[in-house]
Image 1 (cartoon, rainbow, N blue to C red):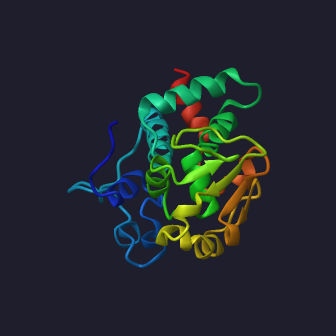
Image 2 (cartoon, rainbow, N blue to C red; image 1 turned 90 degrees about the vertical axis):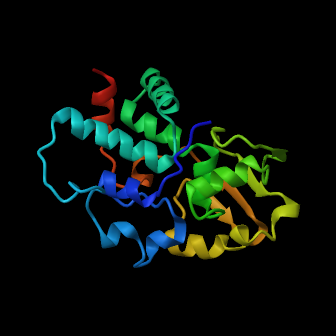
Length: 208
């Protein structure tokens, strides 16, 4: 599977927003985006007028990179969202938020989505008593996510409660850090996603 192996901080600088790709580092003064809040490269500081297409593309790339989703996967999510009832952009964000790797990150059992994906692939988490090692697994209301008994001493897992205390847990999830368990209480709503995303730009891009 293709994956980005260069410096993650370049992605934040390219998209002009902090994407929280490096966990705790993003909350410190060591964050590269805080020190250099402009695009990478020699022309990074130049101000250029962007076309409507460029604005739409950058918004799509920002969301795709933040969640760590490949282009084909992202387009498939959009097609599914477009066929669902309701607002396409809101449906798209809801589908992406329900990915298991994102749920693990939101619950605080990992410091980043990339780290959550790695933990999921190692079979560390169980859903409703069954081991699941697919990061793109779509969680449903009522699903109970538990850290496997033999994996509860992993340092990253032990930091769960501290992570949640700093970052907070969205209302559609419930976490019992002491028992290494989390529950999906409901489907994520648009107001649960506080990161600045203009999903209508993504809809406009894919609808051309």
